[in-house]
Every structure is written in structure tokens, then in C-alpha cells.
Length: 493
Image (cartoon, rainbow, N blue to C red; front, side, top):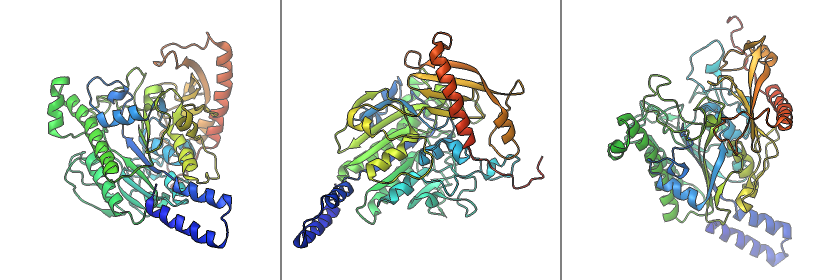
């Protein structure tokens, strides 16, 4: 509870009582205001499902995150909103499928291309978590990776402050030239230059500095978007030496050290909360997508992330692409604790946080649902299935849907041929995408087959037909609501 705010409000109520007895609804409003929690989102980049010891990694030590999981809620069936970074972040911030925002793939830096990928950005009319929370008195801060606009730190496209962040200290994409001594951070529109240290520690330093300088006792929303363990990886040498005897090579030891360095940074932030008596704070930890594939591109030589029992990796619509570690821990609040198989998505953060903060939901289609019942009772059942359409997926079936224990996937075919891989939907390819048909379906029961190894479509024909019908309906609705970019130069072939 914010003591200063409590004192002011109690005094105001006392003075009012000298004139008249406050109405019950007025007291309720005051109590609701007092109970607004601080909200912290900790987001890793390319962290695999099994990359924390709490989720089964046999080598990496993540003592601080393990404690958060063991004293809070461990989400075994938590999903990012896409199997790739930019899309995933847009979905998390808006509570909407990233396709609705027109972010279908990662966003490169600005360099004019035929399909306008370099013009893609989170659109100004999207309503985000920080904007929703600001409407009910929160102070807001982003530290770390942004990756929601190609023209970063430019007035040509909306920036973090345009989406409700009071304060931001961020990079466009990766820490550069690596996690060590990065040179590409921008603070509230001003380039910072080279910073000594490692990115995970640097962003936590900045978060702590912001908390120290907060101008009021208002509740806060803090997003800490770590760059780790995305390539190019750099890790403290003492941690690398710790893991060398346990790794197959130095590159793997550097990856292990990279993940632990994030854990140590999280530990520093948690220590700050403890020493400064910051309670009533809900913390959500996760990853933007699954682990990178080793040597998928030349610089991915440290990518030893583990999908555990899941099929696929980052950029797949199989489970490992977007099923990621999920942890929720509410400091200073008694909640359900333990492990849960409830199906929860990063899409759910906006409606959940809005409910906890007493904010109104945006007047638009949301794909997320509030999971406050999970915090209270340990039970949460989705009303709407989760649907992903990633047109540049590595695996063949690029559209997927999960409902309850079931997951269905399908290919996209056009004129009896596989739809070409697509980075972005724009006026030059949208008709082809609309005409493509979902086909070649497979059905999995994830409760009994987490590895998606056994297609049970013929074993459960009634379930399959019902899932297929709903799958086609959900995909068509998502496609109809997807944003289409218009080429600036209509002469481009």
C-alpha cells in the first residue's frame, strides 16, 4: 500500500465526514485506488521452454527466477503471441493478435524493400498496456528492447512514448555490437553512446534509477525487455568459466552464462523491491518466442537454447515456437501458488492488468482474456481459442490453433501449391493470401502428447471435425481483421 497516498485519502475522507457521511460507492472507489498493484513485465528474447532450471534445464542455474516460480505460479502452458520477436511484442502490448496490427514478422531497420517490411510499425491508434494503465494513474517505463518500429527514434513513426511510456531507454532491436558494452541505447529520444557492462545488468540499472527518481507515489508499470539470450551473445567471463566444464564447447558455456546473467539481473531488481519495501507488486516473467536454431544464420553460433520436449524452435508454429516459460508472482499479495496447466497467453496481460488496476478495456477486438481467476483460485479456462498465423514459418503448417487440450494445424495452399513464404501482407499479395485454402490438417492432444508426435485426427473424428470447423472460422476472422500495408511506390513490381 502506498502510505503517503493512504494518508492523503484518509485525511480527505475524514474532512468530508465532517460535512456528510461518504457514500458507499465513494469509499469503494478509494479502496480500489489504494489496492492498485505495481506491475512488472520481465521479457527475455529467444529464451527456450527448458532454459530455466525451474523448467527442467539440467545445467543452467536460475535461482532467482526459480524462487519466483516456486513461491508464485509456474505456467507450464504459457504462450507468446507469435513465434518471432516484433510480432510477439506487439501482441503482448495490445492484447491483440499481431496480425491485427499488421506486424507479421520481425521488423528490420529502415531500408526500402518491395514488400514494405521496412515501413512496418506499431500503428498510432493501437492501445497498449502502458496507455491503459496511465489512464488510471500509473507511471510507466520501458527499459530494453523495443523492436516495434523500423524507423526507431524517428518522428516518421510512433515511438515508445506515443504508446504510453512516460520514460524509455531502449534499442531498436539487438544490443549492438553485442550484450557487452552496447552503443545503441536511446534514452527518451537522446542517443546515449557506449555503456560499460552487460545489457541485462544495464537495463536493470536503468530501471532502478527510474524507480529512485519517480516523481510521485503513484503505482507503476515497468517493462524490462532483456536482449538476452538473443545473438550476438556476450557473457561475463567468470560465469563462462563456471559453465565450461559443463558445456560441450565455449559457445555453449557462453549461452549458459548469458541466461544466468539475466537471472542475476532479476535478482538485483527483486532485492531493490525488498530493501525499499516495495510490495503489492505483480511480476510476470516470460520470453518473446522460443529458442533460436543453432547456426540457422552465420551469427547464431551461440544458440544453444533448449525447447525441452517440444517440437520445433523459434519461427515454428509447432509448440517450441511460442510455448515459453511463464511465471507470475504477486509480491505482498496472497494468491494461488503452484504449477498450473491452464492455457495462458501474453495476449491476456492487457485485460488482466486492466482489471487489476480498475481500468477500462480498449473499445476494439481483443484476443486476450483476463486470468484474474487463476490468481485467486488457481483455475482459468479460456473462452476463445488461441490462433496463430505466421506466414513465414519454417515448418509446413503455418496456421495453428489451440483449444483446451487440443491443437490443430494446417497448410496454406494456392492453386494446389504451397503458398509462398510471406514476410508482410500488403496490397501486392493480399489477394493471394485471401484465396489460399487451409488444408492438410493434423490434430494433437497436447495433454498426452506434448511433443506433437501423434496425429489423432482419425482417432477422434468428432473432435477433429469440430476443431476443423472452428479453426477455419477463427482463421478467416483473423485474416479479415488483419492490417494490410499499402506500398508507397505503386510502380514497384
